[in-house]
Length: 194
Image 1 (cartoon, rainbow, N blue to C red):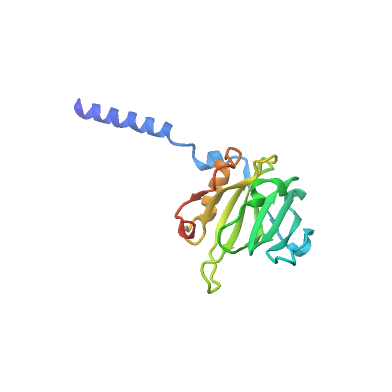
Image 2: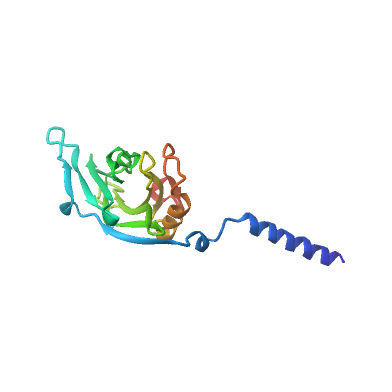
């Protein structure tokens, strides 16, 4: 009888634990897909010229993203800034970058829910030291025009074997509800993002 009671308590504990866990990623990702565009500054419209006097502002461009959605790219003090949407320059993302000198990859992943973009994932290459060595960081940005387009998560792609999976999970679970007054969340092993 005592053995039966332990089995019953164990079974009940499993039921409680199963209901307390979040929904499986596959269930959350239902209806979520990815599409890809390129950021090629030579094909984008330059909207601000480089500052020749101070030399710290390298210019700004407007590129076409998923289905023509505007992508704002700027360079200042050897750091990149990327934002999205019709008022991309005014969104919080337009002022966010990594602390180290950096560049961005040209491939931009758009996370889509039923064909509507809600987040992006872009690989950034921050400098690691004076030797020219760079790191690799995936930055997830939520797309909420009107002040809610901001970086929500960062994943060190060299410190995490499953960096792409982690970035997609962050996009799918955090985008749309992230408060842009908070700093982006570091996901996985921090690596150079400590």
